[in-house]
Length: 200
Image 1 (cartoon, rainbow, N blue to C red):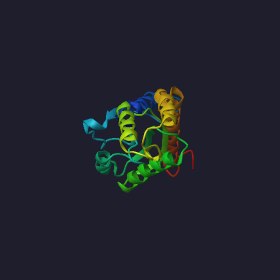
Image 2: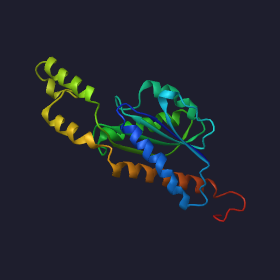
Image 3: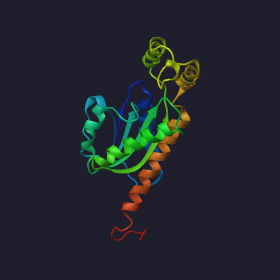
């Protein structure tokens, strides 16, 4: 079995989760029926090819509620693949915004012709340059600017500061665990009807 972990990272948060998924594949050795012949960690910026992969873990940073247009344009490479989708965003992972962001990614991957075996979303740190941009916006947009969606406020500043430590080790470990479980489940379900299967 060949597994590619492909990530599109802006500040390093998505890369951190991708690395954890890559490293965590070693734990699949506990299941002899799930042999991993090859694993690769690939940066989208290098325009990776995944034609030989049996599974792809695909990670992106959230921008405007989804993945960026360059990443979207590359998705047809996933046609026919079994894909696990994950993302990071500088907001609460249990928020409607997070649910929408991962759902949009999943739907785009499905529309590209891939089978989605699972998904994961977690907190990430906000790009410091974006924080400065939001601060400037709050100063220049006049009255009512702090009420606008992206304008900086002291309350938002507290969240940005707290999220500097994300994704945490626990979040990365959960991403790895979730991918491994979905991969094992996908493989075993696919072999249920195989001739001579002991699972029949």
